[in-house]
Length: 282
Length: 313
Image (tube, rainbow over all chains, first blue to last red; front, side, top):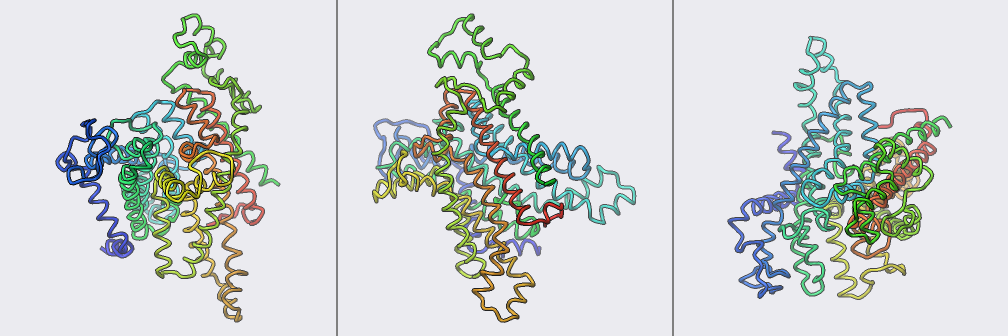
């Protein structure tokens, strides 16, 4: 309860707005099939690049598709993919980080070497190279994103586990005969839930941005998928006269990642005051 | 000296690992490199025989470890192979395009430091004021805005509406301003936060209390005591981010049509020019690792505790 109050306190007015934004964006993505006034992929060449009107709230794009409907659908694939990537990253990070941090020794040495190698590659360039080499698509994006983010997650988990391992209660549990498996699952992992929740939240925000960037570059989701990143790219040739076609999807990406980052910050203040580097700073 | 040697030695396995990952990129690629190379030479439907000859030429008959060994030996000597597309050496092409990427990276670090550090200092000094709150909001916004979208918005504002800056291309300093602004965003936000945290920590130290007790005035406490001690770690952070900016310039180079290494890599990706993709990954990786090395060494030079292996918090 104290933590909940601390969380609400550190949210502040911007944070409360963030939660509202997040609920609206997630809700409208989820309910898109019922909310959208038009089929997001229905092409009407006679109505191409129609202005904003009562009929088309945000006008139509270069193929006459209703922009508002596409916007409602535009977060679905990215958000689901971001969730899948972050869950996969977290599982890998948890397993590798926990084992390395808890047992130490050669296992830790090998893990550390791997982490150093993957962190030695600037994230974006390696991600683009993997996604580009595998060819555009959801699967390649998934692989590219997991490969470039597991090391960060593992490093933070490893650090947390190493701290917890030194605590005297762990020694106590070992002394009264708790085996490694029991100690890990019952005591070590529950004690780092805070930092993991924080890391998970901030990661999702970053992955959404990465997916949008890849899709924008043509290496991610492909047209005609209604997706915010794809929509910005589609509208690029017309940005002079039809800036709202770029403004709307871009704003959606910015708002969702802002909301997630802001909530992540508040969670960090409430759950985990020690690891300041766990967030988007790292 | 021992520290320098040890730190130098520790980069070798990392560099080998990076080279292995870059090499593996061509292994995971769905196409046949020989076919790709031939099609770029203008042979769109190569015969079996032509493919065989090309495979032989590229050494694709060998086992993977042998291929990797050969590639690595050449890479260490600075030979990253030949581009399928331009038929020129990859390292030469990268070096030719490097000044473009380097100039926007340098300018963006300048922007990030020039805005991030003073703003972070203000936030620390006016802790919990509206200014601090506004800074927090600004930092969050800067990390949340998609770079490609910001870039197009800036073009619309500064080039189309106001006509102050050129839309795209390379040549004058005006061409560099908007790309550097976009690239600076993330680093600027991080610097704001780190400066704020570092300065606040420094202001809580006992020697600041002593300085105040001695009756020194606030400006001199700030500049002579607090700043000097809190900014040293920041300098090292800036070094680390410079390395990653250099590797992360792809989007900006594509939107602003800058002929740098990021644009080169993007072209290569769409043409399946594997030697170039590999070369790009190796190059950005090596630069990044080297920057981290320099940062660590300079940090050890500033703070001798590091050399003795004293754990810093």
